[in-house]
Amino acid sequence: MSVLLIVLIALVALIILVVGIGFALPRTHRASSRITLPHAPADVWAIVRDPTALLGTWKELKSSRVVPPPDQGGKEVWEQNAGGFPIRLVVEESDPPRRLLTRIDAAPDAAFGGTWTYQLDAIPGGTRVTLTEDGYVRNPVFRVMMVASGVHRTTDGYLNALGRKLGATVTPEHLK
Image (cartoon, rainbow, N blue to C red; front, side):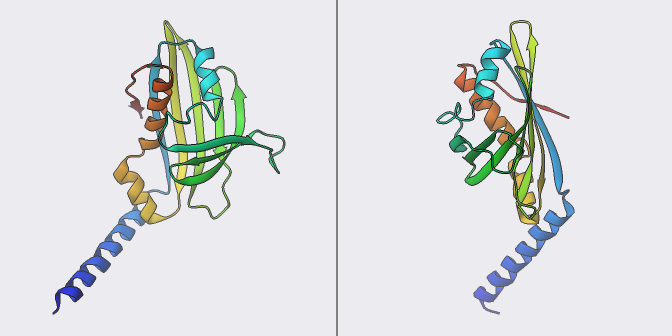
């Protein structure tokens, strides 16, 4: 048996294994992380509510802007390039300076989607920020990649960038 054939068989077996593991993983997930910032809720809210505020601070965010809301019932829409993907976010709920809910405006057959809920709670000396991602990943290979990189990777990246923007060093705490 030639080396090339052995390598090809091993590669096919690896692909089958990854796809099989992906199908065994759940399609939906929830990832919640939180940080504490030494700033008033209104100061934190001003950044959370501005889709351009973390440009240059959050490495995943390459572009972001508010766009006219086509077919979204007058709701605010953000267009972003985050993590290498063009994403449209719809602001579903906004309760300043406490809660923001955004939803990925995805096609019915999109590879992934879901919501982010930002919860800001006033605490003595600052604000506790909890970010919860309720998402889905359709592609089984992408599910394996998500688990391998950690389901909190994106939310933690956002929260770390939020801390940097406000001059604070934070360590996101993962919630159950």
